[in-house]
Image (cartoon, rainbow, N blue to C red; front, side):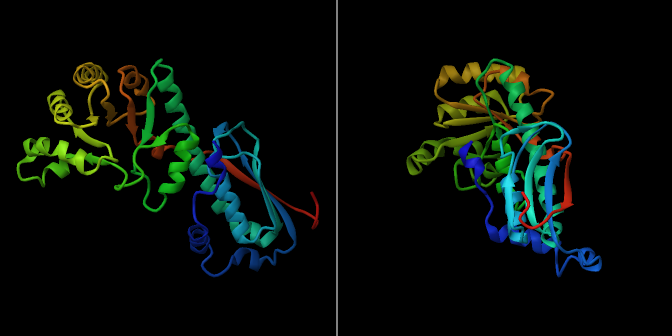
Amino acid sequence: MSSLRHVWVDDNVIHSWIREDVALFDITTEALSIRGDGVAEVVTREPIVVACTEEAAKIYELAGARSVKVIKGSGSTATSGETLLVARGDAAALHIAWRLAQNLVAICSGVATKTRRLVEKARASGRNVCIAATRKSPPGLRRIYAKAVVAGGAVPHRSGLSDSILIFDNHVAFIPGGWRELLTKLSKLRERYPFRKVGVEVHTLKEALEAVKAGAEMIQLERFSPEDVAKAVAELRRVNPHVVIATAGGIDEHNVAEYAAAGPDIIVTTAPYYAKPADITTRMRRAWRGAV
């Protein structure tokens, strides 16, 4: 969990979030002439897996808070009523950061909490299966969603288009000879990119077997039932005991245990990104400068 203690988002990105929320100035604090030192505490109202409190702390720092302390770091658990982060400083700076930091923690902790439930339900099957979240996170927010997924105990499926070769129907559509020609290309792809795994998405057991025999190192079973996944795993292992088998499509908390029990190496899901934000609030109070 050591990497989770670091901020995964660049300062310039966080500055852009602040500028989006404060185009010119905070008109409410100006209208009320709010001044003086204060304390802001980010608190959860429900049990959660915490995510992105480090980035929330950075929001407070860049907004001008004098000191910020993360109480509950990403990947830790918190019960209802626990404080996750404390910031101290000028009240105007605290008000600039307040809602933005709170929203970030709420969204990311929601993702992390749902991810943890998926991971735990998959483990309950008794199988050692990896839960991998797709790259279908909102544009521009992949880093924080990836961090939330890791905080929940899963991994990103792919960080982007450059990290592996994964062939879909939309790629095959542009190969003149279609599926048959693709099969002839698989071994050449492995020779050209020996440092990258070559994966193929398939829709039938026949396609899966053909792809493995042609040299695919990873097979992604798209929208197979748990029963069909189990059958495919058995057949593919007979052809190549070392092939990596992933299954994807419509997998969420209601069926992840069934898919895990079917024996794939990886369960690919977008479900964490649709998590409800955690119930997070921020409590503020006046404080004397230098007070602990």
